[in-house]
Image 1: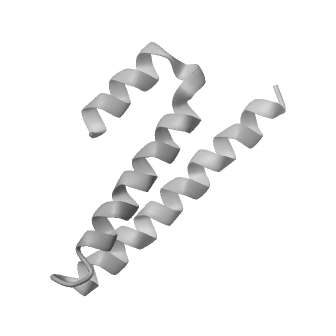
Image 2 (image 1 turned 90 degrees about the vertical axis):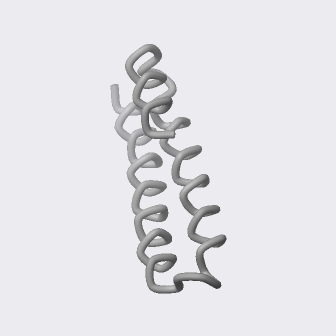
Length: 66
């Protein structure tokens, strides 16, 4: 997933925010799947997913100022 997102952002920088949101949702899904097996890791993955989502949303705010 990271390689696909990096290639997509390099080829089409306009979609960087959307790719970031998609990747954060995928990571959130992985975190939900890990809750039963490794809850500590799932919490960290969830925190990273929420942080990535906020950063992706911030890219839209930065683009609207240009």
